Length: 350
Ligand code: LMR
Image (cartoon, rainbow, N blue to C red; front, top):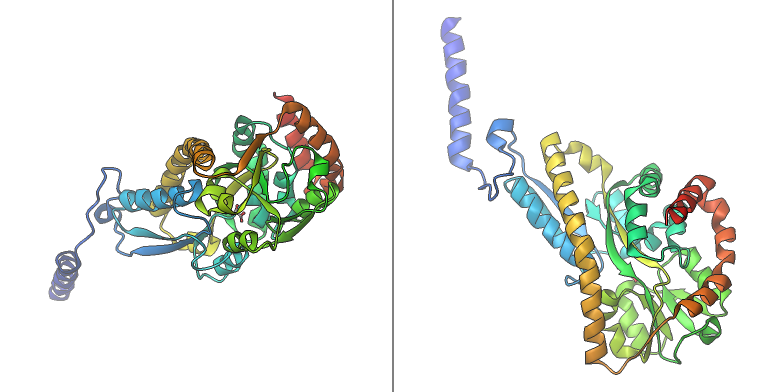
């Protein structure tokens, strides 16, 4: 019996040594990296992260930085493979790919989320936020919590809110100053019911087109205009196909970073912590960076094109707000009192 125990001990030690020497471990490049030897983890995890925008945008840069940080923090044992520009899926296909386990992470715009969870329509109400500080407060407070809880019921685990910035309006027909200026025009929007209604309310029409087809639709005159952030307008070249841009800041374009909850449960706790830590760092970094990037893109558009840029005044903003106010009542039953009350509290805080 004693002999048998010695043989078993010898075999276990031998196998472990061979595993260590034969396969080795990736180098931890940072002191914060998980020590897989100590925690006894020997399985590499790979996550596909799909998104639809260019790499030089707030989301594109955040995804790349996140991949780098996770690799550092896990000593290479968790790899995030980023697929930008919609090379794998368009924005709506991404949700299904996440559910089917074809990708593990996505970061859709709020307007895309409304298709899966109509409560998110709240984020598409026009002129909901009048400053980035208010947006940040919403993300970090009860509004953020309620939205994440709500999307979790639809089978998605939300990890963070990422920023892009306020949306601006471009078109090829005329300068847009007051609501009557959009009469009869056709705009491309993301597939959110509230966005269609926004344009209808002021006598225009809207159509959904995948983000990566918008450039061609503008070029071919299929649509008159579109709404987007400056970094998206610049990085996808929309400004090259448009004559007029109004700085309206009428909606906020933000993202929710979603992970497949089943995949999340398979991850050892220590890697979950590393991912959350990386997410927190990237989220803080990208918030500041998104603002800077959008500013820079405005300058580039102004200098590098003939597009006529008009900045909406406070008085004009008030006219738009009044014209679009009925939408708040239309969507109240869908959004729910709880969420709307939180927004009301937010408004009062200022
Ligand atoms: C869009 O217009 O579809 C984009 O704003 C999408 C995105 O993810 O930024």
